[in-house]
Image (tube, rainbow over all chains, first blue to last red; front, side, top):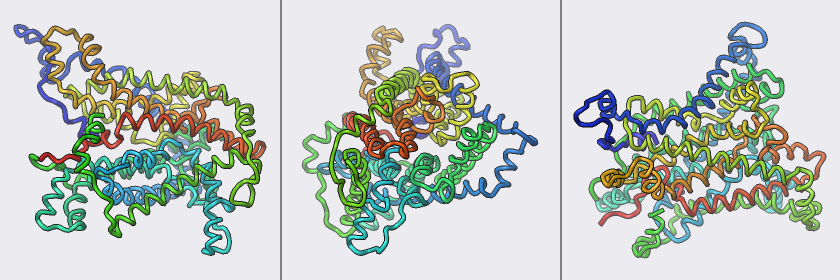
Length: 311
Length: 292
């Protein structure tokens, strides 16, 4: 995305100042600063007022705890294993689920990269869970995977299990909820990146005698890897913010007491906005750390064009 | 967009790939089928239960009734919830498009000092979990008396919506040839004429796509609405969440009936959205046709 923003057509400066008047306005226009930039103002204002200001306000608020010194909230969070473990519980859910979503999306997107009959229908079908929203997915999973749901009934029917398996109200319920609602997103992004790779590159590889696996491993995968980094990041954001499903299909007092639950409980059930903000800030910091690590790894990969040469 | 029209073109015949029956292909299609089967199972569990008289230890319910829909409508005041949902969604769409599209234009056409920082500022709300900025935002909204009101919910939902419009529209504007604008200038068009008569018609497909995607996202956005809404400013998802907790008192079937109503409002929107926009084209230029 950043790449798309960077791709700016140079040299379409508007008539900033007249030719005989090399004014400040003209010199600014040379560097791309002119009245067009005023168009940015409303959006920037909205983001500053509704996003940056609250964030800074919350950051400040987190240093004014109900009791104790400036760092009391942070000390309390990291000192209490019940609170501290929410970080690991969230990561234990979000990292495997995101890895699963991203890795499974690769072969499927690779298989669907070309053009075939019914591709649009299949893409639409795969996208449906995105719109359902986490609450509906959670509600459905409770019935579908529950002890009397169709899955347990089928497994009992074929004699695979003796007793109904516990699939909801625990770690796995939330894991399935994340996969169902986020996999389509990972798939769409991966499909977009795969589609951006020029098929002639693979044809060239085939002409040079590469087999199907070699073409995938040596041509497509290296070109796809930076895109996979982005896919991982964006899908990770969704998985890391898991909230309603952690409460509805999870075990919100135990194994799926994720950090967003802790933040919500602190802010809106104990009405300790200071503590709630502190946890929200910690949550943002942990999430951004993972993203920065992934992006740092990504920056070491090949970053050239995936479009191939001329033709 | 343009590519979809081409997709039906003459080339499609020769380009169409056959289903290759290698083991790897079977594995992949099997995985897709398995995923879709489970999604269908989840949705069907909700849908079937919403019509069930009672459903305990059996494959299918004992009997069927549509009574729960009426119950859900009355119990959860769905009429007013739907009105609120519609108001929030439309306001978010209109405002985010009105302020997002001009910003996307500036980002697509100008290269200025500090552009990376501005782009980052627009990217951050999408890269952070809604809870992380939702809690401080709700606190601020409480301080200013916006919490629990319709405008508070709308303001909160704008935070991810505006960057999303910018993200979708920037590449879309970039692909419009700047020469068209220069030609209009040369022919004497003023700035507003340029926007209204040249750019707007070209941007309509992109704006429509962005609007529908925002609409779907706003309908499904749980966290921000949950944190900022009051009892009379809940959208459908939030009302659904609360009704799940009321399930002890109310029949589970009426909760599921409400879930089905929710599904029926979002699903058609998504299908319409996907007719306008190929989701894969939002990220990268699709290269399916080798130039020969």
